[in-house]
Image (spheres, rainbow, N blue to C red):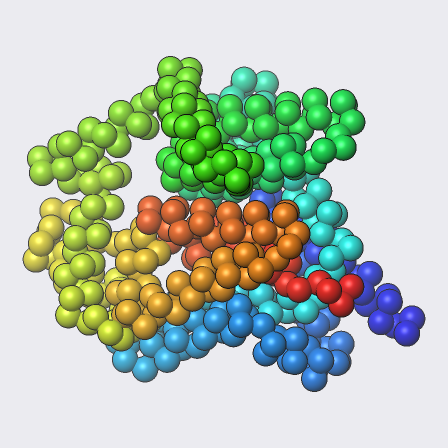
Length: 399
């Protein structure tokens, strides 16, 4: 009994450490993951572990999604790239099921506190760079202060963090005055930080998140929620557009990229549109099973040479739906979407408001941002998705 208790404590300390390191360092997060996997693999109790995994439809959907990537290797020409993609997808086969079996409801508040503490630290560093109090380091510049990761990952993670703090702020009834002031302060500062950094997908995610939060708060007053959303979201957008030069420039650039696409395709938005158009040519010819797990770069290069030879080729269409459909066809796409379906379904079945609201919001936000990039391939955003999925959708009645 003492061994089980000690092992449980070790797991929880490791999970809290993982939550803290998640938005700060790839190496640190991976180190904790390796330790967790090694302990889990050699700690016995395999029958109980397997039974827990097989009893979850969400985990089965996740494992099937990975297995389809393995099956897709059978008709891929570029095995090396295929194995590279499979390696990036291992979280869905192994990490999510392992975390699922060791998370504990009594420690979730510590997971969340550790994660938000790390986000607060990244926000502080971002401001210190932006105000030129410290020299830019790692990924940060004064113009785009995202030190620990690129803005592509930072802004979506920041948007989700704002949601967590804002949800706690508006739904917790017994708040001390000091705690209320502190949470309000962080919502405001994180929101401002959202618009002095350059991640447009995360900024779109922010506005979607605000809309979801409004509807969740006024869940029995849909018309009122809709009217508030119509006023609040454009107001925040207008203020951010006027106050932030970077946000202003990024919005103007995106609009200009779209309007001048026919004349200049070699822009950030123009490239994404071209990726989508060329990828659709591949999908039409390989609709059901795709071209294989590793053949997106090869097949895209062929189509690009015909349709848009003046543009550089790519290994990633910057759209998760497109990437999966090209590689694995409709069956692969449906497999991926089944994960999000199970998350939303399980959330609606949960009577706990926090788990229900956050459990619905997480997949909805990813379903939005995956139109602009392959967010289930990147380290930070994939780990965030997997880590929160490991406890948001688990039935903790046994605890």
